Image (cartoon, rainbow, N blue to C red; front, side, top):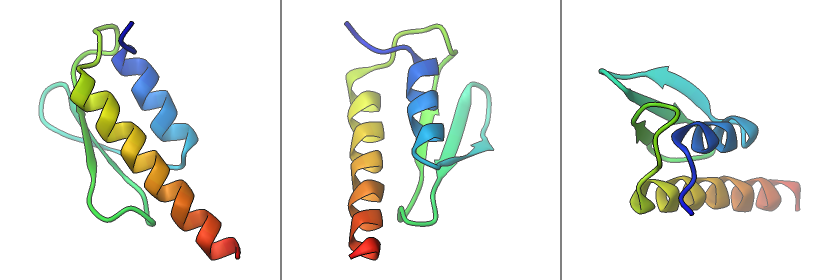
Length: 72
């Protein structure tokens, strides 16, 4: 079952990403340890597309990896 857009945004917030406004239903998310940005489009109650979930998970994993490397 696909996640909702609101769930993806919660995941990004919890990982330390900062929300920046975009046009229409788009939001851009940045993190000082992540090169680039993650764009999430859609209303909060709609189902996320598989590519959106993959992009969010990949970004969170990259940030987690970099945080672990900084601690060591």
